[in-house]
Image: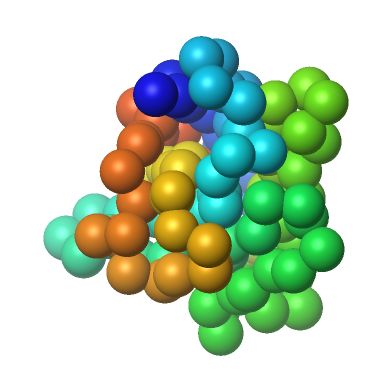
Length: 124
């Protein structure tokens, strides 16, 4: 098992940047594909970005492509989400998740471990 704790959320103006971190304890993150999801008020949870076990391969939702970067440091058991050029529509609770599958899935059903979430609010 792995326990995940997100940090780095906050309030930022449109056009600004934030870096989210996801620290893992228990089993090492190198055993998992890692993903970031988000849930905006009144909306379903959606995939944002994912990264494979080695960090060599990534996948992004269209809304994140070109603005967000997912990375991982397996030595530190930490996954990051660098978010640039933030927009008000990026406002959501962001969740880190771990998957035992070998591919980067965008369906939340494939992720068995979740953090508690961190709030990101982008003001216009």
